[in-house]
Length: 77
Picture 1 (cartoon, helix red, strand yellow):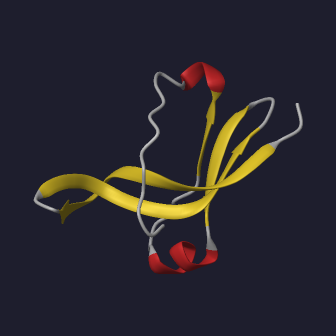
Picture 2 (tube, helix red, strand yellow):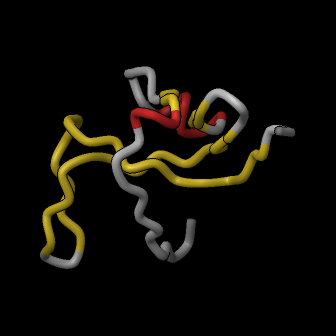
């Protein structure tokens, strides 16, 4: 399989609580690139997000570890 790479945002839980429109979202949204290949999926932050967050926001996961996928609509991202 040829790797597929797309621009995406990742919601990282366990970081900080952010309130938006009265609905608490526990985590931060990080913009970057999502990649899927033969082994699994991975996310890497873009340069701006990498410079803004003091923690490493990259992650990778094998397909066997995925329990569910949700697509969310974003405005201005």
